[in-house]
Length: 101
Ligand code: HEC
Image 1: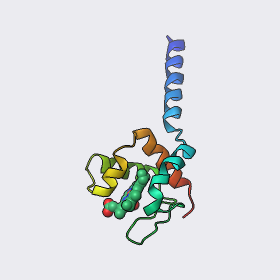
Image 2: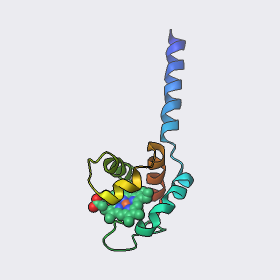
Image 3: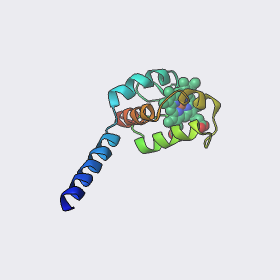
């Protein structure tokens, strides 16, 4: 029984670490579509657009999911994120967090 619990515990640890390993390079590729407004370096091209560089990934991810579900209402951003999977969103968030402010 003890052996079984250890097996289950280590399997769970494996799942958690896979879920957290966002792919920054994949995020960078997807973020190409965002550069027109949020800038190639995550610094917005106009003052009316938010800078994303160096922002917390968890916050960026929550913001994108909120646009997707209409919890946060913005027509342009909804259109931008509606085609992205949850994995794309996590990768993009990790990419912007990795950029310097
Ligand atoms: C046409 C311009 C435009 C494009 C293209 C665009 N955005 Fe945005 N984005 C905005 C604007 C404007 C806001 C602020 C909206 C608001 O008031 O909620 C915003 C907000 C955001 C926010 C929330 C920032 C914050 O500080 O709360 C995130 C995250 C974001 N965009 C990610 C993206 C991603 C990822 C893409 C590409 C898939 C993208 N945007 C493409 C204009 C754009």
